[in-house]
Structures are given as structure tokens and as C-alpha cells.
Length: 155
Image (tube, rainbow, N blue to C red; front, side):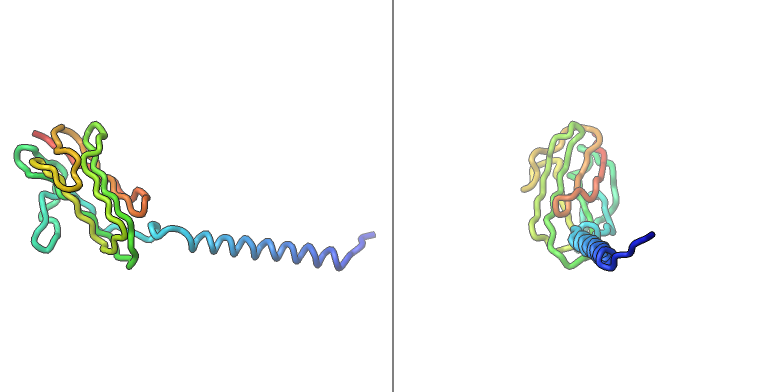
């Protein structure tokens, strides 16, 4: 015959209910602790010859000439999230050498701009580009890689 023990079934139900509650709380904590990065959505990402007086890109360009242009302007804009972020913008030449590095801590704006010169080094520029080929720009937000842009430099 089947014996039914009220204490055992009640205890098992209690344990099962507690485990479900524990997993739900753990899931809620995990989701609420995800970085703000998941909320960042990029509006504009481009390279250009320069910015106008208001700080907006003049034209979009993904190919530049060392002899015709003065440099490359990088522009990225995202939907504001009203939080401070740590921003890193790293530029690499065709040989994957770091040529420019911009690091902004506690950045509260939703637009980042950076520039490399073909003539003289700027504050964040480690070297003046001299190689022809494809260059890469890596955009990090709170130490997470958010975007990679590419452009070419020719004669």
C-alpha cells in the first residue's frame, strides 16, 4: 500500500518553493546588474574630413589621401542614457600598430570625437600615419568593445 507522510510532502514542497524563489531572485539580480552597455544604442558612427562650427561632421568619407587631406575626424553618437562612462578610442594602422589613443573617464556626453593629423601629432596621437592601406578605430565604452570602424589611406 501507498503510505502518505504529510511531513515529507510538506518539506519537499517547501524545498521546491524555496529553490524556485532562490533562482528567481538570482535571475533578477543578474539581469539588474548587467552593465549599462546593453542599453547603449549608436545613432551615428563615421569618419569625416572635419566638423562644422557646431561640432557635427561635414561629410562622410572612408578613404583619405595623405597628399590631399590634413587628417581624419572620427565621430560617434549614441542615444543618451544619462550615465557617466569611461570612453576609449584606439586607432590602428595597417600593421596593427597603435597610432592614437584617447581615454576619457567619467564621460557624461553622448558624442565622442577624435582626430588624427597627417601633418603633426596631436595630444592623443602617438605617431603620424605614413602607411597606405586600411586603418581601424576601436571604440570602447566601459572597457567593452562597442564598435569598430575602418577607413583607407592612399597616396
